[in-house]
Image (cartoon, rainbow, N blue to C red; front, side):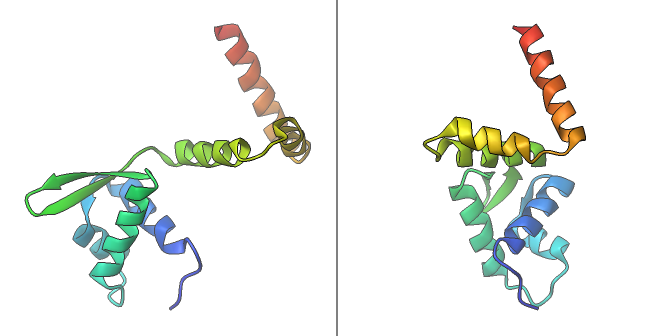
Length: 119
């Protein structure tokens, strides 16, 4: 079965978020795909490390990987990176907010109001 772009990275991250720190062999086992090569898992973990999405610690002759942050934190970092890459931040934010559902807009307003009260 061929995975789409980024799908295996997402699956590997899901394993780390669910089970915590793990070696490449542990991640491969928890993915439950016998057709997946160990070296492929090592490559994915190395790429995630290079992107600062996971951390790693040397234990003996292997690395143990951990997620650098939880799923909401990673999503927020990705959103911030997209915003930082745009020259007209105000337009991007305006378009983003205009496409929010009523519930999401209300949640954002509450977060902004709470944040201002904390200053």
